[in-house]
Length: 80
Image 1 (cartoon, rainbow, N blue to C red):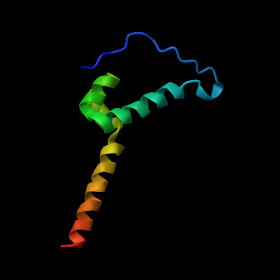
Image 2 (cartoon, helix red, strand yellow):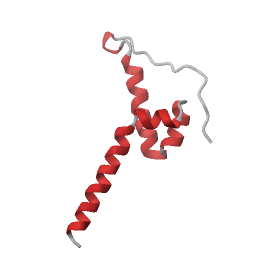
Image 3 (cartoon, one colour):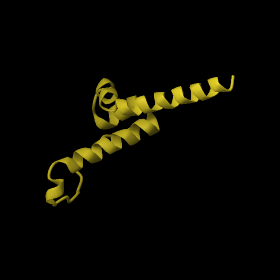
Image 4 (tube, rainbow, N blue to C red):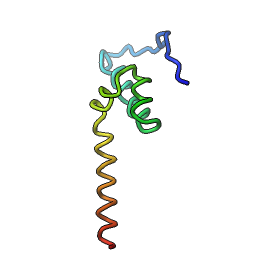
């Protein structure tokens, strides 16, 4: 199944613009990718966080999906 990486990444981000937030931003971005592709449980495992923490931190993704569902329901209601 999933394998955790134990070796540090060999990534050079020697630029003042990326002093501290670039790795975090990359992790946040990958979290979103994992959620969209595999759901919250797998994302939590990949990010080494609890599912509760991942759901809290990425709640905007679920809110967006629920908004799409509501929009679709309203559109279908108009045609009834």
